[in-house]
Amino acid sequence: MKLAQCKNGHYYNQEITQFCPVCGNGSGAENTNNILVRNENAFRNSSDDTATVYLDQNMETEEMTVPIFDGDPDDMPTMGMPIAEEVWSPVVGWVVCIEGKSRGRDYRIHPERNFIGRTGDMDISIYEDEKIALRYHCSIVYEPIKKEFMLVPGSETSTFYNGELLEKYVKLNENDKFKIGDSTFVFVPFCKGDVSW
Image: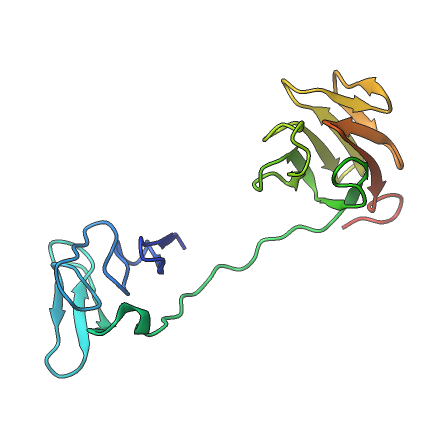
């Protein structure tokens, strides 16, 4: 499903329609009518409070019927949308901040590569330390076949591993320490020995 959000904040499936079925905004939509569906291909049904909407400009593809709402937009009815299942991966270990502004906070490590940076789209987001790069300061990789963890440096940032400048990837062992920015972290594996997912 290709979920989109119109400018009014409604979610809709772009694989089914090119415009929002609630307010008519989206590609091919026009805000000219005072009905809920505002599109040149919307036809008000006289028998009830619905409108028939064709899903393309040529009125050749299947049609759908949606409710009309002429009142205050804040009073519009709520329409449910199917949401894709949550995608998650199991925890394989942690890093715990032992020095810096995030002292005492733990961060989960998941299988494969875990990018570390300050922005929210990083796998491990450490936003409190302004000396950490916004994105890709370094990364931790968990290789599930060998059950090995590796610390990989970023291309333009300094990462220190057990007190030494990290110039190439190293295997992480339990209780190893690494420092990025003003923060120091200790590595705690979950998957080790007979424990794995």
